[in-house]
Image (cartoon, rainbow, N blue to C red):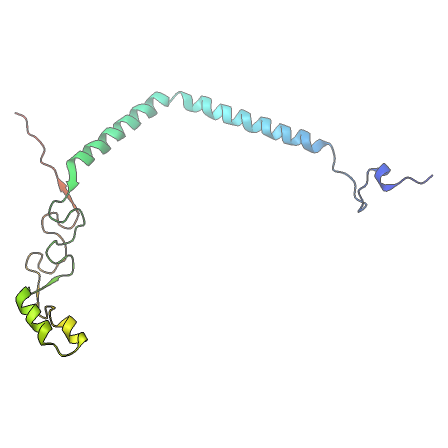
Length: 150
């Protein structure tokens, strides 16, 4: 009698099934990984007090710097000059009455819109066209006044 492919342990393509040692190998590798992870945890366990103390000190330092540095009141924390908004120049102010007269005198819609806008500008005197806030030197933060004790 001839044996069929299924009886021989072959699939329909004529290949054999995988060996049974494969699951044992996977189990052994999981066991080894677990032992390594446990060993690492045991070794790190002795330094936990030092790590907790170091983390606490870092948190205190960070809190102290956050308290000491506040957003600049002049620029609102942006670091840009509040007068020229970081552009380095300012438009000369046009009186509302003058702007409305210019709009009424304009002949077409394009000039009617632009007639009321300022055309003259000057360099910013507050920041001398450096574009950064003069109060905080462009950092956006101010050092808070620390109380002095005698």
